[in-house]
Length: 158
Image 1 (cartoon, one colour):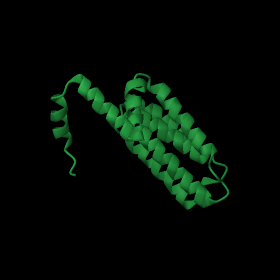
Image 2 (spheres, rainbow, N blue to C red):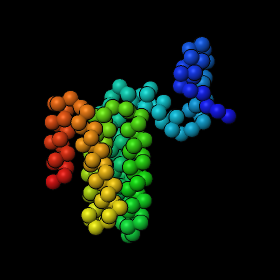
Image 3 (cartoon, helix red, strand yellow):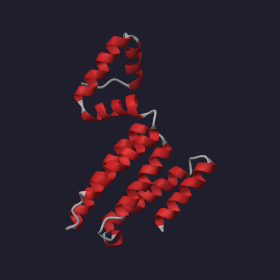
């Protein structure tokens, strides 16, 4: 089965009634966990972005606390898992400020693992890539926000 384009889907959805759209959304929510998480964000958490950021930070902390530091393999695997989950939550929000804040927090959390980050090349490269990504995103923001986030980034890097 070939999937329809976004434009075709939009045209088709415009033809349906509100109750039919609700049914379609509920079907999507039952089909996949990510769809349900996205609907939860859009319905409940989009109004209070700071509370959303705090809840994601709490989840990052919980996941980092579960990292098995006995082997570099498990540290790397856990770091990639936490990054994948963080990026998923960033995709829900689509706000650059949220993305920067969560990536900076992720980098802080990774650097606070009991294992020295600079002794593990893979982990250090993940860390450097995220810092580079944050710097690139900061350049696209308003000057005031650039200044604020650059201060936060510099304080984190020290």
